[in-house]
Image 1 (cartoon, rainbow, N blue to C red):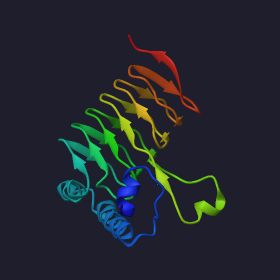
Image 2: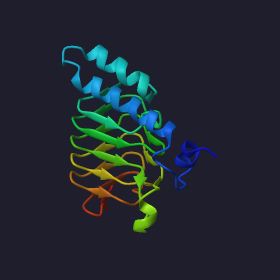
Image 3: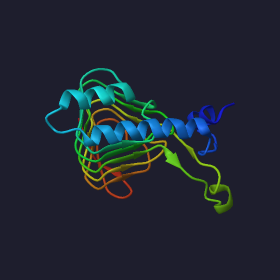
Image 4: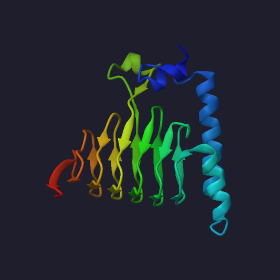
Length: 182
């Protein structure tokens, strides 16, 4: 099993594997080019990210944008992200249709062993899914393994470390459901 296969399976893997380094370098270059493209060249920005991300239709991402690999990210139709979105995509990140993300949001499938010796040479992750018609407020952190259902609103500044059921308004650190939509 390759290190990439281990990574995508959520198993401990060596992040210093040459193929993984190559993939990260490619994504970092594309993100750099995207972030440095002038605002009046929206078409060029879109082209750069279209080659990096899996997308199902119309999407718009404000700079600055950062990711680890890009190829593990799938965006649904009509996706919008405000400035400073970071997606650490060591595992799959699936984002549904009509999802809107506020500024300074971090979505991280990556995590590390608690054991300090093991942490020196391995990491692992778990996929993240965000359903359709979700609004993710500014400064939200979504952590490895989380599933956010359809029609959810995640309040600004929340740290989402557990699943959020569909039709929920959830806020806080840790994020918790405070209202269910009828």
